[in-house]
Length: 325
Image (cartoon, rainbow, N blue to C red; front, side, top):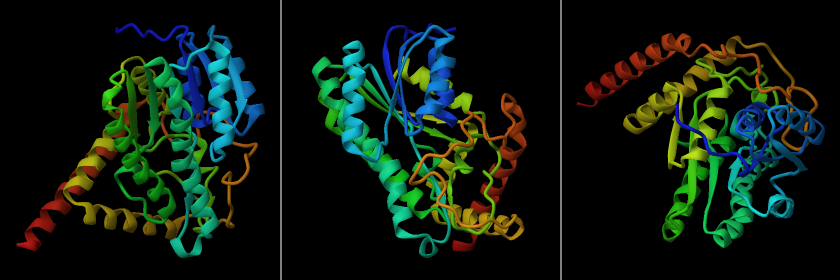
């Protein structure tokens, strides 16, 4: 097994109070770095910090709203002042809102983009002066499959994630003369986290992630590996690569099929009142790494979903090719 060399390094994780961010904090803690954990929920952060300290990690918690550029600058300054260095910055804080585009308030779309896209840009903008001063550093962007596959009924979310992919590519182009500063993108498939419980929901229906749903620990392990050995793009879960290939070969068909599947789900889903979830304020529920939707620790159980999806995509693509002739 490859040795992970993160002991004593300073690692900043945004959105660390629940879900993938919390799973990542615990995974990193086992390698005893200096962890700076940030989110809007300081009480939940303090709970995560205590768990991480049990593994021997030094931990600092900083209440931070990533949509506020000044707050993110303060986070970077605090992290650097604490150990006089920042080795890894993980942009992870994210939100979701679902609903017909025109039925979802524009302030909701705006907040999703401010958090998911501008929040990541705020993080990179705040940490980059430190990286350039010390001539090294790694930014890890947790983007998701939404970075290349559109999510119907999540237009603001799709705009933010597609934007992140472009932002990362542009930033890497600027940094070619800084060979030891890395911008790394992660594309996990659907994760068993509380994120969908926290979502703004204007569909009128209860939301569930589409199977297969993966253990967030797999994303956390990928973050650790990329922090230790930076690489440009990492796909977590076979579904992620399947969707990447499907969209690359049949973009229009993939989007139409996705929309059709979601409409079919809405027909049978339980009704729910509209909610803004955690978009504008933190919440006190769902602070665990897991959301209770998946089958954590059993990756082989996903194969039936992956095989079915692959077969459906190939048949649909073949039919589309034949009909075009």
